[in-house]
Amino acid sequence: MNRMSITRYLIEEQQAGRINADLRLLIEVVARACKMISIAVGKGALGGVLGDAGTGNIQGEAQKKLDVLSNEILLETNAWGGHLAACASEEMDHSQPIPDMYPRGNYLLVFDPLDGSSNIDVNISVGTIFSVLRCPDDVAIVGDEHFLQPGSAQVAAGYAAYGPSTMLVLTIGHGTHAFTLDRELGTFIMTRRDIRIPEETQEFAANVSNQRRWETPMQRYVGELLQGKDGPRGKDFNMRWVASMVADVHRILTRGGVFIYPLDEKIREQGGKLRLLYEANPMALLVEQAGGAASTGRERMLDVQPTKLHQRVPVFLGSKREVEHVVAIHREHDASA
Ligand code: P6P
Image (cartoon, rainbow, N blue to C red):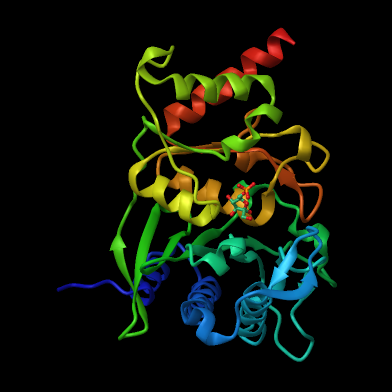
C-alpha cells in the first residue's frame, strides 16, 4: 500500500518549492515533539504526570503537570535545529528567544502545548496547537512584538489530537491534511489529503451554560438552533461540546459543524475565552484551507491585527454557510444598535 509519511509529504512540498528546508525541519521537529507528548499523555496515571503542577500561568489558570512537561518538550526539541528565532506559548508570560549557544533561524513558533488540559484527569482527548510565523528581517533581539502578526501571515499551522489515535492535522497553505501516528513505525502516515468541510451543517459546538451571558444576537442564534425544525431554521440540530478545542475542531473538520465561543459578560474584559495567536489563528487557517470559515463574528479571524501576545477573541468557525449566518446576525445587530 502506498503510504505517504509526513516526511515524504514535506519533502515533496519542498521539491515543489512550496516550503524550504528550514520550514520542513521545523514541522518535522514539532511532529516529533507531539509524538513525545502523546507518549506522556498516554501513560495517564502510570506516568506520574496527572494532576496539578502547583503553579499558575499568565492566563490565571492552574497548570497541569502535563502542561508544563509538554511546554518543555516543545522548547527543548526546537532549541538546537537552527530553524527558529523564538518561541511563545500559552504557558509562558513572554516569548523566549532561541538560546545564544544555538544557531538562530527565520521562523517564530507559537503554541498551546496541551490544549484542553482540564480534561486530562478525566481521560478525555486533548491536543497541541501550533502556529508558524516568519521572523521579521533585521531583528537583533526577538520580542513579543514580533509575534503580533495577523493570522493571514502564518506560513504553517496545525494540531496534534491525542485521542483514540494520535493524529496530526497540518496546513502549509496548500490544503489541510491529516496524518495518523503509526505507533509501531513511530511515523505519522497521511490518512486524509485535502480535507473539505461540508458548507452546511446540523451540528453545533457551544458551552450553552454561558448562554444567558452572551450578546443578545448569539442568545437568539442558539435559541433558534435549539428550536430545531419547529423554529426559523426549519431543521433539527445536534450539539457536541468536548471542551477541548482540538477535539471539537477535529470533529468539525471531519464531518462539518460550527464551533462557537461568543463574548459573554464574565469574560468581556479579556475580550473572549480563546487565545488569538495559538488557538483561534491556527484553527482558522486549517478551517479556511479546508473550505470552511472563521470569524470573530465581526471580522475574518485571519485579518485580526493582534495587539497582545495572549490576546483573546470570540470564535466562530466551521461550515462556511453557518459561519456566514452568524456573521450576518452580528452585522444586523450592530446596524440596528
Ligand atoms: P469552557 C480549554 O480550556 C479551552 O481553552 C478550549 O480547548 C476549549 O474549547 C474551551 O477552553 C472550553 O471552555 O468554558 O467550556 O471550559
